[in-house]
Image 1 (cartoon, rainbow, N blue to C red):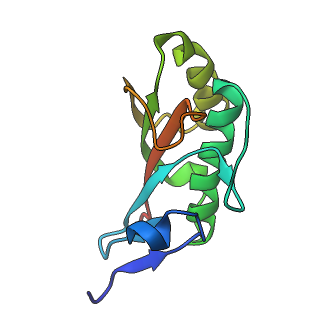
Image 2 (image 1 turned 135 degrees about the vertical axis):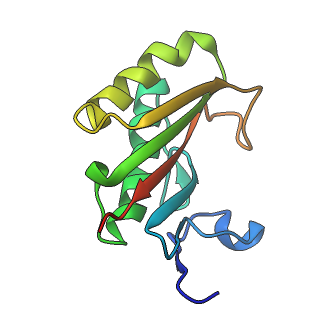
Length: 129
């Protein structure tokens, strides 16, 4: 489609599942696919805080590829597998986005594609005029 910009990050599931890491729409809205604690195709171990920081880093790298940064983020979604992890994931979110204050949701889910994962994040950004 004309005016839509798609970005790949080389993540392990992008080709096999047929999706883009980020998609920028003509109206300036940028949607970043679910991101986990995966770098260079390998799971990066750690607790919920570390996984959240890494996952948000993957999302922010996708935005960087479009010339955007954390200050462009308008919405985040955090998915965690345990209620006990909410505070640690929230702490990571605050450190990264406290100055921006995007709309945010955190949802407890039953699991992810890799049982080592305890958090996955999604980010939406906006390229203003």
